[in-house]
Length: 290
Image 1 (cartoon, helix red, strand yellow):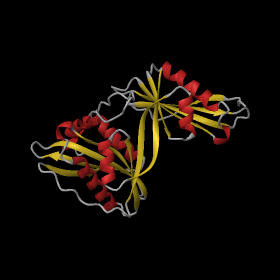
Image 2 (cartoon, one colour):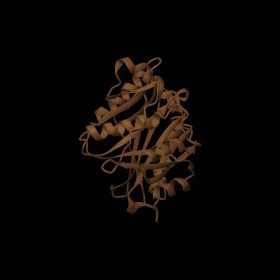
Image 3 (cartoon, one colour):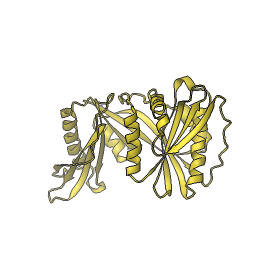
Image 4 (cartoon, one colour):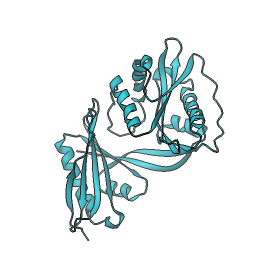
């Protein structure tokens, strides 16, 4: 049975130069909320064609047309915003996974999520790679490394994304600093480990880890990347092992570390497996062309 649905747009504060978030609330005939939808509209160079969908329907209201009504409003808005693609993500086998597939979205990427239990982890320190040294910091990148660290972000440009029309994220120093500020504003801690090329002092690769402000629960790995010209030296595993060591040392009450990796990214999956990460679940990335 279809539920009469009222869709109300909401005002979402916090727009930045890189993105803004739009939102809608679905209510039944009595005004009770039954679902919501969010559309993250990317504004930065390289991703001006893209928007990201998050849609939720109360379990008791599913299969009554609520999700379909919300999606129709979101897609209308995405077209008004001149978007070419809308992407969304759902846990494999969950209701959202089935809904997206039935709504015309195409599965474009598989993601494997894994977790490292810090209490049981027996971490062996990898042998340092000759010609490189590690450096780390918390929060904002040091001024003397800002330019070369920003340049190293292109290490993510060829990250396996399968058929996802994700574009290329263009980084500058301002964006790097804004990202660090965003983590701090949430009350969390950003830890970064980089590999320095000793021949010229430039950043050859990096790994980032975000830890809850109270140092408890699970931390979350963000990006890990090595520039193409520096691959083949074991830098990714070396940096990630150091990030894990520091996390255990600085946050003794932290339970574990979470990571997500594209199924097709066999190299990073092998790095995580070698460090003791264990799979927890899979998710699917979907895309709708407009």
